[in-house]
Image 1 (tube, one colour):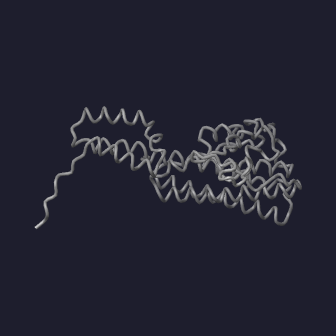
Image 2: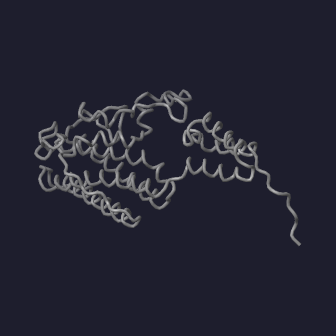
Length: 291
């Protein structure tokens, strides 16, 4: 004989207790839902308008808003990533074919990175197709950053090896921040999120390697394998947007500079954490490279 349990009671007090518990593990829950005040006001209005039996459904709607992503939004992220991968793949393909890259380890490294980027393109196109959508077409690129004029600030990119590495560094640093900025949009699909994070870490290794190549070529020890503050690594204002925001030294509400009297400098605090870029910011950065 089954025991008789009392009926489950759900009321607004349950909701507030639940939110408080979630807040302990996800401090950003209110930002996901809007804001704390708006969230509470919205639920209070919902609670007055609905019977208690309908409150769990309303609660589910709120959480879907906070954490749920539909297939269309996931595909949108993948299409965005594909455009960036098109950019990098064509850049390295053209670079290996035409840029004065020294034979030996430099050419081998750039060739490997080219192959990685082409693999990323193939994977993203396959996944987008599997999700029932058509991959976006590859844009026409202008790697001089001249919006199609081929006379932008990097017009010598395929004849000047140092400039080629500088542009490569910018693309890789931007790509790392771009993938990080979109990770939250892929939470609904673990397989796609995992693949995106794997591409993200590969892009980070590309960035580090390209930076090391520039450091060796220019004999400039100020160029590090990672980003310091919002420093462009000597490339200049034309790529500053790719580095803005990297000078953040506060993480999870704590200022890292000299935290716990550990002597951590401002530079070290910024180097220890990498910051995401929004989709709009990335699109603005790559716009000059699209004809």
